[in-house]
Structure formats: C-alpha cells, structure tokens
View 1 (cartoon, rainbow, N blue to C red):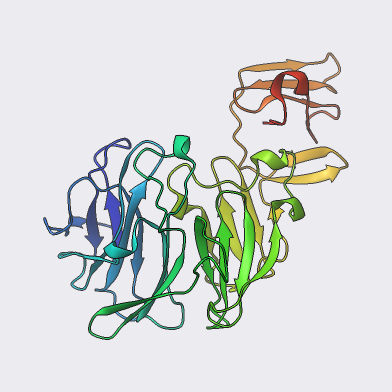
View 2: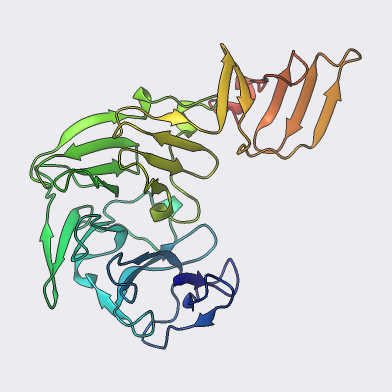
Amino acid sequence: MGYAAYHSRHDIADGVVYKTTDRGLSWERVSDDTLPDGLHILRLIVDWEDEDVLYLLAGEGRFACGPAALYESADGGVHWTSIAAHLGQIADVTLDPNDTNTLYLTTYGDVWDPGYTCIHDDPQGGYLYRGTFDGHWTWEQLTDGNNLEAGNWLIWLDADDQRAIRLIAMDYPELWESTDGGVHWTFIGDKSDWEVGWTGEDHAYGTSFNGDAKTLGVDPSDPDALLWADSQFLWASRDDGRTFVPLYTDEVAPGRWRSRGVDNIVTFGLAISADATHVYLAMPDLGCFRSDDGGASWQSCNDPDYVGTWNG
C-alpha cells in the first residue's frame, strides 16, 4: 500500500491524496472534502504500525503555497482532521521512530519576509513540541526561548536513542542536540564547520525551494545518517551531525572538482582548445567553469568582482 500527494499543476495549491494497493500499478483518489481546499502538500507520513493512519503536512513551496498546517487520517486517507492548529504555523513534523503514538513538530516564528508568501511572522512561534496520542492529542512545549532560543527549526530524531532530538536552524544552518528528551540543548556545529564543496559558504546548506520540510531526509538503513538537499546542492552526515560533506562533487585536487552527477548543469556555451586540454563552460546559474585537464576536473572561473560570493 502506498500514498501520494497530487496537485493539478506545480503552481496551484489544490492538493489531494491518492492511494495504491497494487504497488503503484494503479491509483485512486481517496481524500474527501474533509481535506480542505487550497492546500499545498509537502509531506505524507505513514504510521509504520498501522498503514491506515497517516499525517499530512501542508505549507509553502516555490511555486504554490497554502496554510502551514497538519492533518491526520485514521482510515486510509479518506477522512481528515486538523491537529495542532492552536500551536501556530507548522514548519516541520516527524513521527517518533520508536513510538507511533508520538509526533514532534516545530512552528514558524520570525521569518525572512521576502522569502515567503503565505508564511508570516509569529511572535509566539519558533518552538519544538511533542505530541502524544491517547485517544486524543496532548502537546508539550519542549523549547521555550530559555533552553533554546526561538527560531525556524527542522527536526532530526534518532532511531537508536529515544531521548535524542536534533534540531537544525533554517535561517543560519546550525545543529543543536538534546540527549534528555528536549530539556537541555547543546550546540553541535554550524555550516562554517561543515564542508561545502566548490560553492561558497554563503550559498551552502539552504532549504528546499519546494518546501522547507522537504530539506532533510533520514536514511532508514542508518540512524546516524542524514541527507540534506536544498535548492541546488546535496550533502550528508553519517555521524549524528558531527560532520557534513558534499555529495554533489569530489575534490580530486586542491581547488579542483569532479561532478558526481547531481550538479545544476545546463550548458549555454562550450569552448575547447585545439589540443582538447583546456575546456570552458558557460552555464546559467553556475556561470563560468574551466578544466585544464580535458574535463577530468573543474574549477570556477567566475570573477568575484561581478558575482561576489556566488560561485555557482
């Protein structure tokens, strides 16, 4: 059994839920009018003990947006109920990997206004909550501005340790960790400590253009691993967030890079020397890149007088 979100176009917030019972060979719409109109669906989370229970996070993406809200279905995606609406605009949500009766969510607080259309500043937001279900949802606020300052946070839980919680800040990427269920927090590191590849630090470790909650992906085969995709690049940590490394490129020599196949490469112009040793590429977004070894490795040839810190 599987579920998928459907929108009629990439730039219209009219999300509905489809379901398959034959491993994707056929699909049918299951959500009824209890799922409100005007939603841009970012994430579906299925209860790993009961496939008829699932959660839907809606919000803002690059081309469409709607309310940043959380919904629950207990009958295979047919009927939906709003949950945690009183907490504010939901930024991220995840199901406890050790307890399907527990959800964690964060709310938006002070946001960068030019970056959002539907999300607005909330002086009461920017915190982490834990919800427990016992016939109804009960919510406990875990951060309050004293143990960890308000912010816009993404959640990373630890399947190996039920009391370990990690939060990643969206505004300036940094990682905080609690090992006692959210009571105390320790700063682990930020993007100035992490490898960025050939791009500049200013443009590394952002959030997904398609929705903030789509930025992080937990590796189900390795609880210590996290994948991070933003508007252009891909990184990973495999040591509980102590280090992050780029997955989009390999440094084959100091300052020289080789693509791993997930670069934003669209070539507008190509120039090759007579002996094929020197190659220049002109690309939108990435700008100018050159190779002095026949394409085996590359380095940026963007002029900082014109592009500033933007390396592509």
